[in-house]
Image (cartoon, rainbow, N blue to C red; front, top):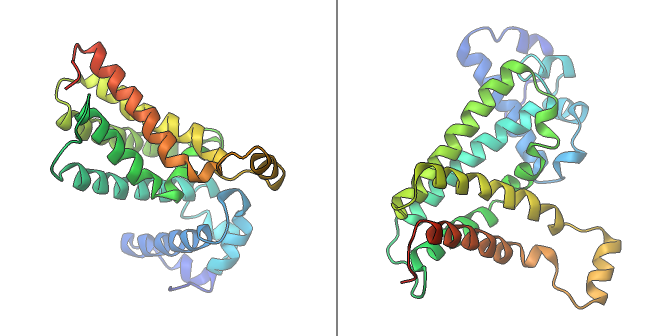
Length: 232
C-alpha cells in the first residue's frame, strides 16, 4: 500500500486527482486497521501515524476521525447493495406461505451478515460516528445515505411490487435499525460470555444471521398482511 511519508508531499497535492489519491491512502490505511481492531479502539493519532502524517494533515482531507469511518461505511454499503441486487436476481422464491417475502428477507439478512465491518459501522453510526462531523459533511453523508436506503427500497419493491414506496422505504430503514440493535450483542465481554456458557445458550455471534433473518421476515410479512396479501 502506498504511504505518503511527509506533510510536504500532502501540501503539494493541489490538483483534484492528487487530493483524491491522498484521501484513498488514508481510507486504505483505515480499512487495514479495521481488520485488526474495532472502530472504538482506533484513534486519529494512531491512524495518522500509520499513514505517516501529523493529525492536522489528515484533517485536511477529512474533517474528523468519524468522517473517515463514515466514508468507509458508505463505500461498503454501496458494495453490499450490489451483492443484494445480484442475489435477488437469482431465480426462485422458497416454497411455503409468504415465500417471496421470506426469500427477500433471507437474501438481505444473509448478505449483510457476511459484511461484519458494515454491521459494526451501522451499529455505531447514529450513536458515535455522526456526533463529530461538520455540517457540510453531514449534508453530504446523509444525502448519500438516503440514496443508498432508496436503492435498497427499490430492490425490495422490484421483488414485492405490491409494496408502496412508503412501505418499502420503511422496511429499508428497519434493516438498519434491526442490525444496529442486534450487532452489539455479537461481541460480549468475557464475563457475559461466561454466563452465556453457564446457561447453555449459543454464542450471540452464532445466531446473529438467524435472528436478523427472523426479524426482517416478520417485517415483510407484516407489511404483506397490511397490504392485503394472502399466504401463498
